Amino acid sequence: MLLMTLFVVVRRGWRSGPSVHVACLFVGAWALVLLLFALPIISYAPTTVEAWALLYGSIAATTLGCLAARPRWESPPAPADEQQRLLRATIDPGRLRHVWLGCAVLGAIGFAAFVYAIDRVAGWQAVFSSPGEVRALKRDSVEFQDAYGLWKLLTYFNQVAFVMWTVGIRLRIFSGRWRLAAAAGFVSLIPFVFTGDRNLMAAAIALTCMLHVLWPWNGSLRRVAIVLGLALVIAAAGLTAIGNRYGGSLDDHPEVEAHVQIPALDAVAIPYLYLTANIPTFGKLTEDELAPNTIGQMAVLPAVKAAARAGLVETAPVETGVFYSIPFEAFSNYSWLGSFWLDFRVAGVLLLPLLVGYVATSARLRLAAAPTFLGLWTAAILLYVIAYSPLSNVLSTSLTWQYLLLGPVLSVLLQPGAARRMVARLVARRRVATALGAATLLASAGVVAVASSSKPSQRETVASNELHDAVEKARYVYTETGRYPVPLSLATRLAVSRPGVKFLPQATYSEPLPPPGVIAVFTQPEDVFLRVRGGDGRVYEVHRTEADGGITFGPGTRDR
Image 1 (spheres, rainbow, N blue to C red):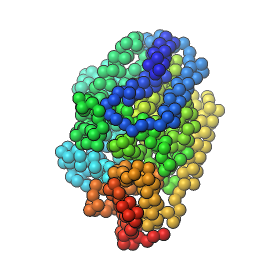
Image 2 (image 1 turned 180 degrees about the horizontal axis):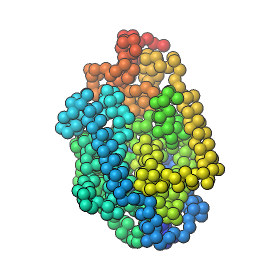
Image 3 (image 1 turned 90 degrees about the horizontal axis):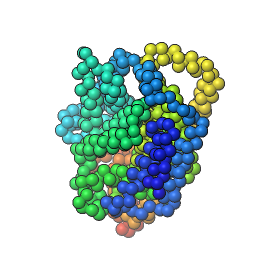
Image 4 (image 1 turned 60 degrees about the vertical axis):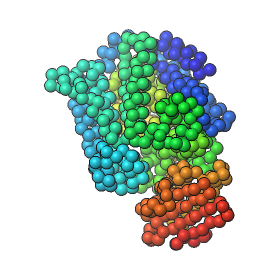
């Protein structure tokens, strides 16, 4: 069914004007994932009929949103040569070279900050010689996270530098003393090999592909498909290599290997997992009674996180997902449906994708009518969101928001007089600008109000009370599956249901306690151990065992 829909959308999108139709990209991405899911490579836990209905309903809603934008925004596009001329007029070659160089320098500073943060905990040599240790420090070390902090935002400029370099290659601006730069652009992707950020490298490659596919040109649909196919193969090979370096091979996941049904395909089992496990994980999320109702906060998560840093709200929802049993506990993404479900349940899964589809298609059609660098940049980001929708909701990530906010800045830097024209356009459209500003302020105030209303009370922040609440939730999880999940799975489930409290999984009970306020989680099939060091220096502990139904309290912990 999806293949038939894809065929119809591709033909209609190609004949009607724009060479890339948002609905075509969206349906194609989901068709690919669902076709792979139908292959019996890994035996997943069953997904409920309700979850499947939500998934297909979301696909239909997004496609409807894409098609609804066409009558409002579509107009006959100019010839490709004219579109190229208009687009090139908004990019000054000399400025582009300096913007690329500036972004590359900022990205290098971000990578240096990463090396410094690792050096504070384990020595800088670990970055290049101990990838497994680096991955563990990124996940578990509070000292590393505090040292890296906002410096991570500079690391994102490596991606921008790579995109700007490819634009320069396309415009052939690297000549003379800049000739060496024509071969140096890939350097901006090297830091991600050592930071283990496969997602950031994948985002850079995906955004670059979207931008160049949207670039006006005289080409055929076959050529577009070949370019995208080659990019997908190259990206998959690179990301798999990085994953193997950081413990992402099947040898490091025996729990997954036990459910691989075709041993001859062991080599592709982990990539297959990343592409298809979102479906059963989303199904588990819809059944989870502990899942919070974030009421719009996940949709604007970067803004909520910024408000939390500014002290306007107590805490922000947890960005990472839960390692549900599908039946192994080694995957935690839900596609973009997970964020929408957490925000507004069924309404979120249907209405929010419809809105995103409408906005993305509007941006694409606007670009075809009036090509500018800002329009190209914005449309490429929105298509990147659409292309990633079967895998994760990148719309809710700080990276995507940084990209969107950076668009006007890049536009001003690349084109002389762009700032003056932008201000004049806003002045000429005072009503639109005022309405957008008021809507933004109103939405921000609503998010802050919702987040503020969910602040924990003083009683709830007491260490012993947190342990009691957590052990009750752990007991609920046990009744679902008949055993306690592995520490990582339980820790993520507790963290998602209780934002603001950090839970750290531990492989053994004898591991040292984390810093004060962080709850250590250790489990066995019939036992759960929760420990935390309180602000008063005492150690609080709760041990629940299902062997005799008993619960014991460690030193400093009292039964409420």
